[in-house]
Image 1 (spheres, rainbow, N blue to C red):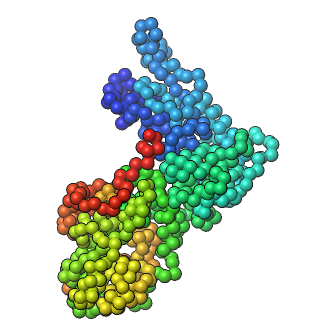
Image 2: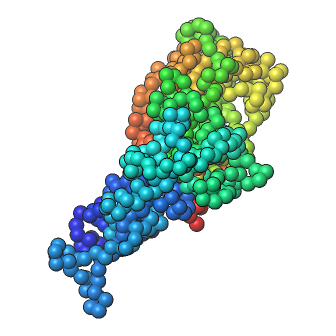
Image 3: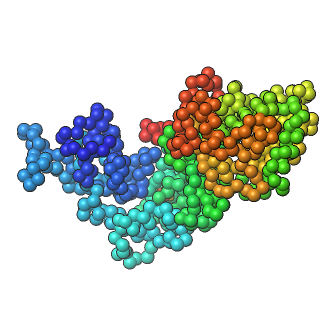
Length: 565
Ligand code: SF4
Protein backbone atom coordinates (compact mmCIF):
# COMPACT_ATOMS: atom_id res chain seq x y z
CA UNK A 1 0.00 0.00 0.00
CA UNK A 2 2.92 2.31 0.54
CA UNK A 3 3.46 4.78 -2.28
CA UNK A 4 6.35 7.13 -2.80
CA UNK A 5 5.19 9.40 -5.62
CA UNK A 6 3.67 12.86 -5.02
CA UNK A 7 0.08 12.73 -3.84
CA UNK A 8 -1.40 14.26 -6.96
CA UNK A 9 0.17 11.53 -9.09
CA UNK A 10 -0.86 8.56 -6.89
CA UNK A 11 -3.89 7.04 -8.52
CA UNK A 12 -5.79 5.47 -5.65
CA UNK A 13 -8.00 2.47 -6.51
CA UNK A 14 -11.71 3.18 -6.07
CA UNK A 15 -11.82 1.72 -2.55
CA UNK A 16 -8.49 3.28 -1.54
CA UNK A 17 -7.78 6.83 -0.49
CA UNK A 18 -4.39 8.47 -0.35
CA UNK A 19 -3.30 10.25 2.81
CA UNK A 20 -0.04 11.87 3.91
CA UNK A 21 1.35 10.90 7.30
CA UNK A 22 4.39 12.81 8.52
CA UNK A 23 5.39 13.45 4.91
CA UNK A 24 4.88 9.86 3.75
CA UNK A 25 2.06 9.12 1.35
CA UNK A 26 0.05 5.98 1.57
CA UNK A 27 -3.07 4.60 -0.06
CA UNK A 28 -5.33 2.95 2.52
CA UNK A 29 -8.83 1.45 2.36
CA UNK A 30 -11.52 4.07 2.76
CA UNK A 31 -12.63 4.32 6.38
CA UNK A 32 -9.25 3.32 7.85
CA UNK A 33 -8.64 5.42 10.94
CA UNK A 34 -5.44 7.37 11.43
CA UNK A 35 -4.01 4.98 14.05
CA UNK A 36 -4.23 2.04 11.64
CA UNK A 37 -3.08 4.08 8.64
CA UNK A 38 -0.06 5.33 10.58
CA UNK A 39 0.76 1.76 11.64
CA UNK A 40 1.11 0.89 7.95
CA UNK A 41 3.91 3.44 7.51
CA UNK A 42 5.60 2.35 10.73
CA UNK A 43 4.36 5.29 12.82
CA UNK A 44 3.02 4.44 16.27
CA UNK A 45 0.22 6.74 17.42
CA UNK A 46 -0.06 6.07 21.16
CA UNK A 47 -3.54 5.23 22.44
CA UNK A 48 -5.37 3.59 25.35
CA UNK A 49 -9.08 3.38 24.66
CA UNK A 50 -8.84 2.48 20.97
CA UNK A 51 -8.86 -1.26 20.21
CA UNK A 52 -9.04 -2.52 16.61
CA UNK A 53 -11.82 -5.00 17.44
CA UNK A 54 -14.04 -2.69 19.49
CA UNK A 55 -16.18 0.35 18.75
CA UNK A 56 -14.47 3.74 18.89
CA UNK A 57 -15.23 6.07 21.80
CA UNK A 58 -12.31 8.52 21.76
CA UNK A 59 -12.26 9.09 25.49
CA UNK A 60 -8.57 8.78 26.43
CA UNK A 61 -7.38 11.58 24.08
CA UNK A 62 -3.91 10.04 23.88
CA UNK A 63 -3.99 9.69 20.10
CA UNK A 64 -4.30 13.40 19.35
CA UNK A 65 -2.73 14.38 16.03
CA UNK A 66 -2.78 17.42 13.73
CA UNK A 67 -4.75 17.24 10.51
CA UNK A 68 -4.84 19.40 7.42
CA UNK A 69 -6.19 19.46 3.89
CA UNK A 70 -4.58 20.73 0.67
CA UNK A 71 -5.58 24.37 0.16
CA UNK A 72 -7.83 25.20 -2.79
CA UNK A 73 -8.74 28.70 -3.98
CA UNK A 74 -12.50 28.94 -3.36
CA UNK A 75 -12.99 31.18 -6.38
CA UNK A 76 -10.94 29.33 -9.00
CA UNK A 77 -10.96 25.83 -7.37
CA UNK A 78 -7.25 25.73 -8.23
CA UNK A 79 -4.61 24.44 -5.76
CA UNK A 80 -3.00 27.19 -3.70
CA UNK A 81 0.75 26.89 -4.10
CA UNK A 82 3.06 27.74 -1.20
CA UNK A 83 5.71 30.03 -2.71
CA UNK A 84 8.30 28.89 -0.15
CA UNK A 85 8.14 25.22 -1.16
CA UNK A 86 6.53 25.35 -4.58
CA UNK A 87 4.07 22.68 -3.40
CA UNK A 88 0.36 22.87 -2.67
CA UNK A 89 -0.25 24.63 0.62
CA UNK A 90 -1.78 22.62 3.45
CA UNK A 91 -4.41 24.25 5.62
CA UNK A 92 -3.70 22.80 9.06
CA UNK A 93 -6.59 22.68 11.51
CA UNK A 94 -6.38 25.02 14.52
CA UNK A 95 -6.92 22.22 17.05
CA UNK A 96 -5.65 18.63 17.34
CA UNK A 97 -7.96 15.73 16.44
CA UNK A 98 -8.21 12.21 17.85
CA UNK A 99 -6.52 9.68 15.54
CA UNK A 100 -8.93 6.84 16.38
CA UNK A 101 -11.96 8.90 15.36
CA UNK A 102 -10.42 10.46 12.24
CA UNK A 103 -10.89 8.40 9.12
CA UNK A 104 -8.72 8.57 6.03
CA UNK A 105 -10.21 10.87 3.42
CA UNK A 106 -8.66 11.82 0.07
CA UNK A 107 -5.79 14.25 0.53
CA UNK A 108 -5.85 14.21 4.33
CA UNK A 109 -2.53 15.30 5.83
CA UNK A 110 -1.59 14.10 9.30
CA UNK A 111 1.21 15.18 11.61
CA UNK A 112 2.00 12.90 14.56
CA UNK A 113 5.20 14.43 15.88
CA UNK A 114 4.79 18.20 16.14
CA UNK A 115 5.36 20.27 19.32
CA UNK A 116 1.56 20.61 19.67
CA UNK A 117 1.05 16.83 19.51
CA UNK A 118 3.92 16.29 21.96
CA UNK A 119 2.38 18.83 24.33
CA UNK A 120 -1.01 17.13 24.11
CA UNK A 121 0.47 13.73 24.95
CA UNK A 122 2.39 15.12 27.89
CA UNK A 123 -0.80 16.75 29.15
CA UNK A 124 -2.84 13.56 28.83
CA UNK A 125 -0.13 11.53 30.56
CA UNK A 126 0.08 14.04 33.36
CA UNK A 127 -3.66 13.87 33.97
CA UNK A 128 -3.67 10.06 33.86
CA UNK A 129 -0.89 9.88 36.44
CA UNK A 130 -2.36 12.40 38.87
CA UNK A 131 -4.19 9.77 40.88
CA UNK A 132 -2.33 6.72 39.62
CA UNK A 133 -0.74 4.83 42.53
CA UNK A 134 2.60 4.31 40.68
CA UNK A 135 2.81 0.86 42.20
CA UNK A 136 4.62 -0.75 39.25
CA UNK A 137 6.93 -2.78 41.52
CA UNK A 138 3.94 -4.81 42.76
CA UNK A 139 1.81 -4.59 39.62
CA UNK A 140 1.29 -7.64 37.41
CA UNK A 141 1.02 -5.47 34.32
CA UNK A 142 4.59 -4.20 34.68
CA UNK A 143 6.48 -5.17 31.55
CA UNK A 144 3.41 -5.05 29.33
CA UNK A 145 1.77 -1.84 30.62
CA UNK A 146 0.88 0.89 28.16
CA UNK A 147 0.83 3.47 30.95
CA UNK A 148 4.39 2.54 31.86
CA UNK A 149 5.54 2.48 28.22
CA UNK A 150 3.81 5.68 27.14
CA UNK A 151 4.88 7.58 30.22
CA UNK A 152 8.50 6.75 29.40
CA UNK A 153 8.12 7.62 25.74
CA UNK A 154 5.59 10.46 25.74
CA UNK A 155 5.34 11.66 29.34
CA UNK A 156 6.83 14.77 30.89
CA UNK A 157 9.09 12.79 33.19
CA UNK A 158 8.07 14.63 36.36
CA UNK A 159 4.83 15.54 38.10
CA UNK A 160 3.57 18.97 39.08
CA UNK A 161 0.79 17.50 41.25
CA UNK A 162 1.43 18.24 44.92
CA UNK A 163 -1.96 17.38 46.45
CA UNK A 164 -2.84 14.03 47.99
CA UNK A 165 -3.79 11.32 45.54
CA UNK A 166 -7.33 10.06 45.43
CA UNK A 167 -7.26 6.61 47.06
CA UNK A 168 -9.54 3.87 45.76
CA UNK A 169 -10.06 0.17 46.55
CA UNK A 170 -7.15 -2.09 45.51
CA UNK A 171 -8.95 -5.44 45.47
CA UNK A 172 -12.45 -5.55 44.05
CA UNK A 173 -13.44 -9.01 42.84
CA UNK A 174 -15.44 -8.31 39.66
CA UNK A 175 -16.01 -11.99 39.00
CA UNK A 176 -14.54 -15.39 39.79
CA UNK A 177 -11.54 -14.86 37.53
CA UNK A 178 -11.06 -11.09 37.38
CA UNK A 179 -9.79 -8.70 40.07
CA UNK A 180 -10.04 -4.90 39.82
CA UNK A 181 -7.53 -2.46 41.25
CA UNK A 182 -9.65 0.70 41.08
CA UNK A 183 -6.90 3.26 41.44
CA UNK A 184 -4.96 1.90 38.46
CA UNK A 185 -7.97 2.20 36.12
CA UNK A 186 -7.62 4.97 33.51
CA UNK A 187 -11.32 4.79 32.55
CA UNK A 188 -10.63 3.78 28.95
CA UNK A 189 -13.83 1.66 28.86
CA UNK A 190 -12.29 -1.13 26.78
CA UNK A 191 -13.51 -3.73 29.29
CA UNK A 192 -17.03 -2.27 29.23
CA UNK A 193 -17.18 -2.28 25.43
CA UNK A 194 -15.76 -5.80 25.20
CA UNK A 195 -18.37 -7.15 27.61
CA UNK A 196 -21.19 -5.44 25.76
CA UNK A 197 -20.10 -5.82 22.15
CA UNK A 198 -18.26 -9.14 22.02
CA UNK A 199 -19.27 -11.19 25.06
CA UNK A 200 -22.84 -9.82 24.85
CA UNK A 201 -22.82 -9.59 28.63
CA UNK A 202 -23.41 -5.92 29.39
CA UNK A 203 -22.32 -6.16 32.99
CA UNK A 204 -19.72 -3.40 33.49
CA UNK A 205 -20.08 0.37 33.76
CA UNK A 206 -18.68 3.49 35.41
CA UNK A 207 -20.22 5.15 38.46
CA UNK A 208 -19.52 8.53 40.06
CA UNK A 209 -17.83 11.50 38.43
CA UNK A 210 -14.43 13.05 37.75
CA UNK A 211 -11.61 11.66 39.86
CA UNK A 212 -14.13 9.56 41.74
CA UNK A 213 -15.28 7.62 38.66
CA UNK A 214 -14.90 3.92 39.19
CA UNK A 215 -15.53 0.79 37.20
CA UNK A 216 -18.09 -1.55 38.67
CA UNK A 217 -20.52 -4.34 37.87
CA UNK A 218 -24.20 -3.59 37.69
CA UNK A 219 -25.84 -4.19 41.11
CA UNK A 220 -26.29 -7.87 41.76
CA UNK A 221 -24.23 -8.90 38.71
CA UNK A 222 -20.74 -10.35 38.30
CA UNK A 223 -18.24 -10.42 35.45
CA UNK A 224 -18.52 -14.18 35.23
CA UNK A 225 -19.03 -14.98 31.54
CA UNK A 226 -16.67 -17.44 29.84
CA UNK A 227 -14.87 -14.56 28.07
CA UNK A 228 -14.21 -12.41 31.15
CA UNK A 229 -10.43 -12.80 31.01
CA UNK A 230 -10.28 -11.00 27.67
CA UNK A 231 -10.90 -7.82 29.67
CA UNK A 232 -7.64 -8.52 31.51
CA UNK A 233 -5.82 -8.92 28.18
CA UNK A 234 -7.11 -5.64 26.75
CA UNK A 235 -6.92 -3.55 29.91
CA UNK A 236 -4.01 -1.28 28.92
CA UNK A 237 -2.94 -0.91 32.56
CA UNK A 238 -2.84 -3.17 35.61
CA UNK A 239 -6.39 -2.41 36.74
CA UNK A 240 -7.77 -5.80 35.74
CA UNK A 241 -5.76 -8.86 36.65
CA UNK A 242 -6.38 -12.58 36.40
CA UNK A 243 -6.91 -14.25 39.75
CA UNK A 244 -5.13 -17.29 38.34
CA UNK A 245 -2.01 -15.42 37.18
CA UNK A 246 -1.64 -12.43 39.52
CA UNK A 247 1.52 -12.32 41.60
CA UNK A 248 2.80 -15.61 40.15
CA UNK A 249 5.47 -14.48 37.69
CA UNK A 250 6.96 -11.41 36.02
CA UNK A 251 6.02 -11.43 32.33
CA UNK A 252 9.53 -10.66 31.12
CA UNK A 253 10.75 -13.97 32.49
CA UNK A 254 8.21 -15.91 30.44
CA UNK A 255 8.82 -17.64 27.11
CA UNK A 256 6.01 -17.33 24.56
CA UNK A 257 5.00 -20.29 22.42
CA UNK A 258 2.31 -20.24 19.76
CA UNK A 259 -0.39 -22.82 20.31
CA UNK A 260 -4.03 -23.67 19.58
CA UNK A 261 -6.98 -23.92 21.97
CA UNK A 262 -8.11 -27.53 21.95
CA UNK A 263 -11.51 -26.98 23.54
CA UNK A 264 -13.50 -27.09 20.32
CA UNK A 265 -13.22 -27.09 16.54
CA UNK A 266 -12.89 -23.28 16.40
CA UNK A 267 -9.13 -23.61 17.03
CA UNK A 268 -8.59 -20.21 18.66
CA UNK A 269 -4.95 -19.16 18.30
CA UNK A 270 -3.15 -18.84 21.61
CA UNK A 271 0.16 -18.04 23.24
CA UNK A 272 1.45 -20.27 26.03
CA UNK A 273 3.62 -18.41 28.54
CA UNK A 274 6.12 -20.62 30.36
CA UNK A 275 9.29 -20.57 32.36
CA UNK A 276 11.67 -23.42 33.15
CA UNK A 277 9.19 -26.07 32.06
CA UNK A 278 6.18 -24.66 33.94
CA UNK A 279 3.26 -22.93 32.23
CA UNK A 280 1.93 -19.79 33.91
CA UNK A 281 -0.78 -18.54 31.62
CA UNK A 282 -2.42 -18.83 28.19
CA UNK A 283 -3.54 -15.76 26.26
CA UNK A 284 -5.16 -15.32 22.84
CA UNK A 285 -3.10 -14.68 19.71
CA UNK A 286 -4.53 -12.49 17.00
CA UNK A 287 -5.87 -14.29 13.96
CA UNK A 288 -8.52 -12.20 12.22
CA UNK A 289 -9.82 -15.20 10.31
CA UNK A 290 -10.38 -17.38 13.37
CA UNK A 291 -10.66 -15.67 16.74
CA UNK A 292 -9.73 -12.01 16.22
CA UNK A 293 -7.91 -11.28 19.49
CA UNK A 294 -10.11 -13.30 21.86
CA UNK A 295 -10.34 -16.68 23.53
CA UNK A 296 -12.59 -18.35 26.09
CA UNK A 297 -11.65 -18.45 29.79
CA UNK A 298 -12.12 -22.20 29.88
CA UNK A 299 -9.26 -22.72 27.41
CA UNK A 300 -6.85 -20.72 29.54
CA UNK A 301 -6.85 -23.21 32.37
CA UNK A 302 -6.11 -26.26 30.24
CA UNK A 303 -2.40 -25.95 31.02
CA UNK A 304 -3.15 -27.30 34.50
CA UNK A 305 -3.50 -30.75 32.97
CA UNK A 306 0.28 -30.83 32.36
CA UNK A 307 1.20 -31.08 36.02
CA UNK A 308 -1.97 -32.74 37.31
CA UNK A 309 -1.61 -35.57 39.80
CA UNK A 310 -3.28 -38.15 37.54
CA UNK A 311 -0.73 -37.94 34.73
CA UNK A 312 0.32 -41.34 33.43
CA UNK A 313 4.04 -42.15 33.79
CA UNK A 314 5.85 -45.28 32.71
CA UNK A 315 8.20 -47.05 35.02
CA UNK A 316 9.86 -49.03 32.22
CA UNK A 317 11.42 -47.99 28.89
CA UNK A 318 9.08 -47.27 26.01
CA UNK A 319 10.62 -50.04 23.88
CA UNK A 320 9.72 -52.65 26.50
CA UNK A 321 6.15 -51.30 26.66
CA UNK A 322 5.87 -51.32 22.87
CA UNK A 323 7.11 -54.93 22.75
CA UNK A 324 4.46 -55.93 25.30
CA UNK A 325 1.80 -54.05 23.35
CA UNK A 326 2.85 -55.79 20.13
CA UNK A 327 2.50 -59.21 21.77
CA UNK A 328 -1.00 -58.26 22.98
CA UNK A 329 -1.89 -57.17 19.45
CA UNK A 330 -0.68 -60.45 17.96
CA UNK A 331 -3.95 -62.02 19.10
CA UNK A 332 -5.65 -60.45 16.04
CA UNK A 333 -9.28 -59.25 15.78
CA UNK A 334 -8.09 -55.73 16.61
CA UNK A 335 -10.06 -52.49 16.55
CA UNK A 336 -8.47 -49.05 16.75
CA UNK A 337 -10.14 -46.11 18.49
CA UNK A 338 -8.56 -42.89 17.23
CA UNK A 339 -9.16 -39.42 18.58
CA UNK A 340 -10.42 -36.07 17.35
CA UNK A 341 -8.04 -34.63 19.93
CA UNK A 342 -4.97 -36.11 18.29
CA UNK A 343 -2.94 -33.97 15.90
CA UNK A 344 -3.03 -34.47 12.13
CA UNK A 345 0.34 -36.23 12.30
CA UNK A 346 -0.82 -38.56 15.08
CA UNK A 347 -4.01 -39.34 13.19
CA UNK A 348 -1.98 -40.17 10.11
CA UNK A 349 0.18 -42.60 12.08
CA UNK A 350 -2.94 -44.02 13.77
CA UNK A 351 -4.23 -44.75 10.27
CA UNK A 352 -0.94 -46.47 9.39
CA UNK A 353 -1.17 -48.53 12.59
CA UNK A 354 -4.74 -49.56 11.77
CA UNK A 355 -3.66 -50.54 8.25
CA UNK A 356 -0.77 -52.61 9.63
CA UNK A 357 -3.16 -54.36 12.03
CA UNK A 358 -5.93 -54.66 9.40
CA UNK A 359 -8.17 -53.09 12.01
CA UNK A 360 -11.31 -51.00 11.72
CA UNK A 361 -11.15 -47.45 13.10
CA UNK A 362 -13.67 -45.62 15.27
CA UNK A 363 -13.54 -42.02 16.40
CA UNK A 364 -15.42 -40.47 19.30
CA UNK A 365 -17.45 -37.30 18.70
CA UNK A 366 -17.81 -34.81 21.52
CA UNK A 367 -20.59 -32.29 21.32
CA UNK A 368 -22.07 -29.59 23.49
CA UNK A 369 -23.93 -26.35 23.15
CA UNK A 370 -22.08 -23.95 20.85
CA UNK A 371 -21.84 -20.44 22.32
CA UNK A 372 -21.87 -18.56 19.00
CA UNK A 373 -18.42 -17.17 19.74
CA UNK A 374 -15.35 -19.30 20.13
CA UNK A 375 -16.71 -22.54 21.52
CA UNK A 376 -18.31 -24.60 18.79
CA UNK A 377 -20.78 -27.43 19.31
CA UNK A 378 -18.06 -29.81 18.05
CA UNK A 379 -15.81 -30.11 21.09
CA UNK A 380 -12.99 -31.94 19.34
CA UNK A 381 -10.24 -29.78 17.90
CA UNK A 382 -9.42 -32.07 15.02
CA UNK A 383 -12.22 -34.27 13.65
CA UNK A 384 -11.61 -32.66 10.27
CA UNK A 385 -7.98 -33.71 10.49
CA UNK A 386 -9.13 -37.31 10.81
CA UNK A 387 -11.19 -36.87 7.63
CA UNK A 388 -8.38 -35.13 5.75
CA UNK A 389 -5.79 -37.76 6.69
CA UNK A 390 -8.15 -40.59 5.79
CA UNK A 391 -8.25 -42.01 9.33
CA UNK A 392 -12.05 -41.97 9.04
CA UNK A 393 -14.32 -41.41 6.07
CA UNK A 394 -17.55 -40.40 7.84
CA UNK A 395 -18.36 -38.27 10.85
CA UNK A 396 -17.89 -39.97 14.21
CA UNK A 397 -20.71 -40.96 16.58
CA UNK A 398 -20.73 -39.80 20.19
CA UNK A 399 -20.85 -43.38 21.50
CA UNK A 400 -18.89 -46.44 20.43
CA UNK A 401 -22.09 -48.44 19.93
CA UNK A 402 -20.87 -50.34 16.86
CA UNK A 403 -17.60 -51.26 18.54
CA UNK A 404 -19.54 -52.44 21.60
CA UNK A 405 -21.71 -54.68 19.42
CA UNK A 406 -18.61 -56.10 17.66
CA UNK A 407 -17.07 -56.89 21.06
CA UNK A 408 -20.28 -58.58 22.21
CA UNK A 409 -20.36 -60.60 19.00
CA UNK A 410 -16.78 -61.72 19.61
CA UNK A 411 -15.51 -60.05 16.45
CA UNK A 412 -13.13 -57.75 18.33
CA UNK A 413 -10.75 -59.18 20.91
CA UNK A 414 -8.22 -56.37 21.22
CA UNK A 415 -8.63 -52.59 21.20
CA UNK A 416 -5.96 -49.95 20.71
CA UNK A 417 -7.31 -46.77 22.28
CA UNK A 418 -5.38 -43.65 21.25
CA UNK A 419 -6.16 -41.02 23.87
CA UNK A 420 -9.80 -41.97 24.35
CA UNK A 421 -11.43 -43.34 27.47
CA UNK A 422 -13.52 -46.22 26.15
CA UNK A 423 -15.82 -46.21 29.18
CA UNK A 424 -16.60 -42.51 28.74
CA UNK A 425 -17.23 -43.23 25.06
CA UNK A 426 -19.95 -45.73 25.85
CA UNK A 427 -18.36 -49.18 26.28
CA UNK A 428 -19.70 -50.96 29.33
CA UNK A 429 -17.49 -52.40 32.03
CA UNK A 430 -18.45 -55.88 30.82
CA UNK A 431 -17.48 -55.05 27.23
CA UNK A 432 -14.17 -53.59 28.39
CA UNK A 433 -13.52 -56.76 30.38
CA UNK A 434 -13.97 -58.88 27.23
CA UNK A 435 -11.11 -57.23 25.31
CA UNK A 436 -7.40 -56.71 25.77
CA UNK A 437 -6.72 -52.99 25.69
CA UNK A 438 -3.58 -51.17 24.65
CA UNK A 439 -3.95 -47.59 25.83
CA UNK A 440 -2.00 -44.54 24.68
CA UNK A 441 -2.88 -41.52 26.77
CA UNK A 442 -1.91 -38.76 29.13
CA UNK A 443 -4.12 -39.17 32.20
CA UNK A 444 -5.45 -42.05 34.27
CA UNK A 445 -9.02 -43.13 33.59
CA UNK A 446 -11.16 -46.27 33.51
CA UNK A 447 -9.54 -47.43 30.26
CA UNK A 448 -5.97 -46.99 31.50
CA UNK A 449 -6.96 -48.88 34.66
CA UNK A 450 -8.34 -51.77 32.60
CA UNK A 451 -5.60 -51.79 29.94
CA UNK A 452 -3.12 -54.65 29.49
CA UNK A 453 -0.47 -52.14 28.39
CA UNK A 454 -0.44 -48.40 29.04
CA UNK A 455 1.81 -46.18 26.93
CA UNK A 456 1.97 -42.72 28.58
CA UNK A 457 2.06 -39.88 26.03
CA UNK A 458 2.25 -36.08 25.98
CA UNK A 459 -0.26 -33.25 26.34
CA UNK A 460 -0.67 -30.67 23.58
CA UNK A 461 1.65 -28.30 25.47
CA UNK A 462 4.53 -30.78 25.44
CA UNK A 463 4.62 -31.52 21.72
CA UNK A 464 4.19 -29.93 18.30
CA UNK A 465 1.77 -30.66 15.49
CA UNK A 466 -1.24 -29.41 13.57
CA UNK A 467 -5.03 -29.37 13.88
CA UNK A 468 -7.66 -28.75 11.19
CA UNK A 469 -10.34 -26.41 12.53
CA UNK A 470 -14.01 -26.00 11.63
CA UNK A 471 -13.14 -23.87 8.60
CA UNK A 472 -10.79 -26.63 7.34
CA UNK A 473 -7.92 -24.32 8.25
CA UNK A 474 -4.82 -26.29 9.18
CA UNK A 475 -3.04 -24.57 12.06
CA UNK A 476 0.13 -25.50 13.85
CA UNK A 477 1.02 -25.57 17.52
CA UNK A 478 4.54 -25.65 18.94
CA UNK A 479 6.00 -27.35 21.98
CA UNK A 480 5.85 -25.04 24.99
CA UNK A 481 7.41 -27.16 27.73
CA UNK A 482 9.46 -30.38 27.86
CA UNK A 483 7.54 -33.64 28.07
CA UNK A 484 6.95 -35.25 31.45
CA UNK A 485 9.56 -37.81 32.49
CA UNK A 486 8.05 -41.25 31.90
CA UNK A 487 5.85 -40.09 29.00
CA UNK A 488 6.82 -40.38 25.33
CA UNK A 489 5.82 -38.31 22.32
CA UNK A 490 2.74 -39.89 20.73
CA UNK A 491 4.41 -39.92 17.32
CA UNK A 492 7.36 -41.90 18.65
CA UNK A 493 5.05 -44.40 20.37
CA UNK A 494 2.91 -44.83 17.26
CA UNK A 495 5.91 -45.21 14.92
CA UNK A 496 7.47 -47.82 17.20
CA UNK A 497 4.16 -49.65 17.50
CA UNK A 498 3.68 -49.71 13.73
CA UNK A 499 7.14 -51.21 13.27
CA UNK A 500 6.61 -53.71 16.10
CA UNK A 501 3.42 -55.12 14.57
CA UNK A 502 5.09 -55.58 11.18
CA UNK A 503 4.03 -52.33 9.53
CA UNK A 504 6.25 -50.07 7.42
CA UNK A 505 9.04 -48.01 8.94
CA UNK A 506 7.67 -44.50 9.39
CA UNK A 507 9.33 -41.33 10.60
CA UNK A 508 8.47 -40.11 14.07
CA UNK A 509 9.67 -36.53 13.66
CA UNK A 510 7.48 -33.81 12.16
CA UNK A 511 9.54 -33.07 9.06
CA UNK A 512 9.90 -36.77 8.26
CA UNK A 513 6.19 -37.44 8.74
CA UNK A 514 5.24 -34.43 6.64
CA UNK A 515 7.27 -35.67 3.65
CA UNK A 516 5.18 -38.84 3.78
CA UNK A 517 1.89 -37.02 4.47
CA UNK A 518 2.42 -34.58 1.58
CA UNK A 519 3.00 -37.49 -0.79
CA UNK A 520 0.19 -39.66 0.58
CA UNK A 521 -2.67 -37.26 1.47
CA UNK A 522 -4.02 -35.34 -1.55
CA UNK A 523 -5.57 -32.53 0.53
CA UNK A 524 -2.18 -31.85 2.12
CA UNK A 525 -0.07 -32.27 -1.00
CA UNK A 526 1.24 -28.70 -0.84
CA UNK A 527 1.57 -28.33 2.91
CA UNK A 528 4.52 -28.96 5.18
CA UNK A 529 4.71 -28.27 8.89
CA UNK A 530 7.67 -25.93 8.53
CA UNK A 531 6.04 -23.82 5.83
CA UNK A 532 2.61 -23.45 7.43
CA UNK A 533 1.99 -19.78 8.28
CA UNK A 534 1.35 -19.00 11.95
CA UNK A 535 -2.22 -18.02 11.07
CA UNK A 536 -2.86 -21.34 9.30
CA UNK A 537 -3.67 -22.41 5.79
CA UNK A 538 -7.19 -22.88 4.47
CA UNK A 539 -7.58 -26.31 2.86
CA UNK A 540 -9.92 -27.15 0.03
CA UNK A 541 -12.91 -28.61 1.88
CA UNK A 542 -14.79 -29.66 -1.26
CA UNK A 543 -14.45 -33.41 -0.63
CA UNK A 544 -16.29 -33.00 2.69
CA UNK A 545 -18.74 -30.30 1.70
CA UNK A 546 -21.66 -32.72 1.87
CA UNK A 547 -21.01 -33.59 5.50
CA UNK A 548 -23.06 -31.74 8.03
CA UNK A 549 -20.99 -31.50 11.16
CA UNK A 550 -22.68 -30.52 14.38
CA UNK A 551 -25.88 -28.57 14.12
CA UNK A 552 -25.63 -25.02 15.39
CA UNK A 553 -21.89 -24.85 14.85
CA UNK A 554 -20.47 -21.37 14.30
CA UNK A 555 -18.50 -21.09 11.11
CA UNK A 556 -16.25 -18.20 10.17
CA UNK A 557 -16.63 -16.25 13.38
CA UNK A 558 -16.46 -12.51 12.64
CA UNK A 559 -16.94 -10.50 15.83
CA UNK A 560 -15.07 -7.42 14.60
CA UNK A 561 -17.58 -6.77 11.88
CA UNK A 562 -20.41 -7.54 14.26
CA UNK A 563 -19.09 -4.95 16.70
CA UNK A 564 -18.82 -2.29 14.03
CA UNK A 565 -22.19 -3.03 12.42
FE1 SF4 B 1 -9.87 0.50 30.87
FE2 SF4 B 1 -8.80 -1.34 32.45
FE3 SF4 B 1 -10.20 0.68 33.50
FE4 SF4 B 1 -11.46 -1.25 32.12
S1 SF4 B 1 -10.34 -1.49 34.04
S2 SF4 B 1 -11.80 0.96 31.95
S3 SF4 B 1 -9.94 -1.74 30.55
S4 SF4 B 1 -8.28 0.83 32.37
